[in-house]
Length: 123
Image 1 (cartoon, helix red, strand yellow):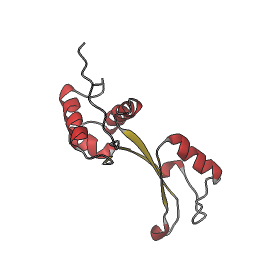
Image 2 (cartoon, one colour):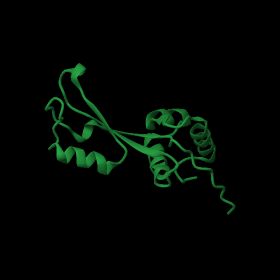
Image 3 (cartoon, helix red, strand yellow):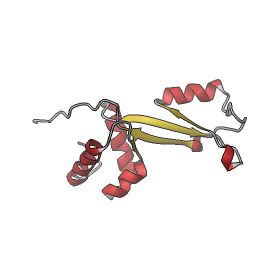
Image 4 (cartoon, helix red, strand yellow):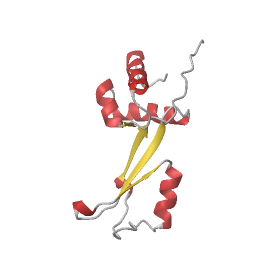
């Protein structure tokens, strides 16, 4: 599947992805913990899987409101959507006028509504 994980970790990841329901969210941290792999390696693999449309990226942006109860969260299906939203609002939350910062962006991945059939590599 990739050069970042061992064959056993690849098999575990494949099992995890196949066993989840559509629209389930994958956290880089959770997957790394389950596979006993580094977050960087897992992130690289999940990004590659999203490029092949096996899983979908999900970008979460939180405003920097000092009051915890008033932090607003926005989700985007692509980095372009996120970027357009931030630029359109001049990096200011439209709900509370707090700032948006790069450090307030989290990347998750989700299982598509319709799972693609697995393609076997006969090579």
